[in-house]
Amino acid sequence: MKRLIRFLAALSLMVGCLGWLSQTAVAANFNGVTLVAADYRNVVEDKMATDYGKKLDVNNTNVRSFRQLPGMYPTLAGLIVKNAPYKSVEDVLEIPGLNDKQKEVLEANMDNFVATEVSKELVEGGDRYNNGIYR
Image 1 (tube, rainbow, N blue to C red):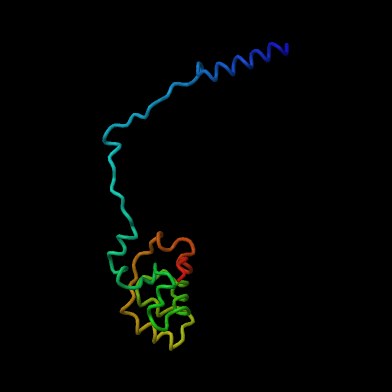
Image 2: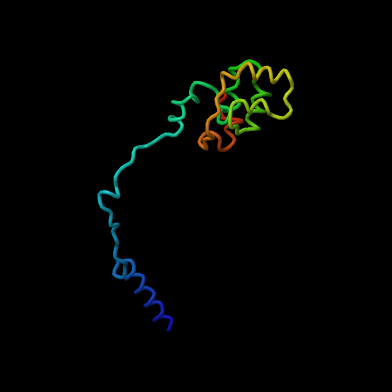
């Protein structure tokens, strides 16, 4: 009985290896319209062409970008990032816990800010707090 089982096992292994019992391949039935190539769109480059590329976006910019404005980094920048998103630039003046000096600094830099739609490519992960650029 053991010999019969061994023989059948060896026979089925050989038949399977030789491909006699394989399934037929089914090719995908695509026509030319299905395979039309689409242009690659980089959402971040599109956003850079707007005011985001010229001003600091309070909804998408990371903390380190606020270093170019005196008095903003790190305390005010952290508060702005922490309390985002904002509907308008003026909403940053309503951050809870701001003192008069901080409000003055924010008001002095209002022309440098813009509030755009939140973009997941720019805010996902911890990149707004630490974007990994060390100089």
